Image 1 (cartoon, rainbow, N blue to C red):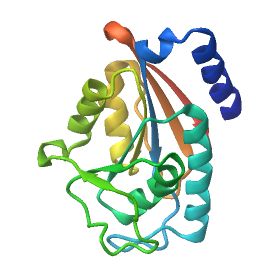
Image 2 (image 1 turned 30 degrees about the vertical axis):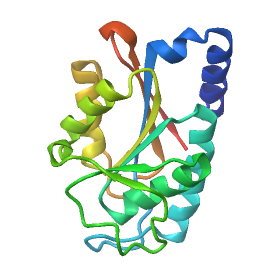
Image 3 (image 1 turned 180 degrees about the horizontal axis):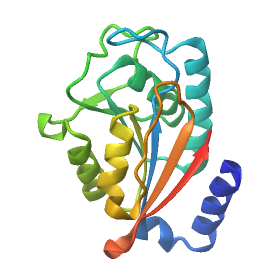
Length: 189
């Protein structure tokens, strides 16, 4: 099943069944795009910047309402094209390398989250509780994406490992209204 099919199906479902938009929370979860180097807080590489534009296309088709990233250049820059395209701020999870010296510059409004949201589990809980009925993009890391998925789906989702050189995996989590069983679809983007 292609990602375009999933996005088109979701868009058709919203047109035919508008109540779905209020009944489900959709979380799009990705690891940051390709980074320039293995430094402590690297910027995105040219390939990573291109991938971030692909993510913006996807986010636009899904109708993303909120964007979250960690406080590192590579995650904020991955979310940057989405924030530009959809004219929204990036909610930044604390505890990172800092985004004030990124190149390209993170030139959209940034909302720094409280320090209590520094863990993947706390962020997943906040997204689930505060973004009810919305479509949310979360940009994380190879070690935080599996933890966020586990926090969103618990034992219903398989254990996941993301290799250090793996980019372009999209995890679409649907959280039904009323605490029903969450679903997970993985696609490449």
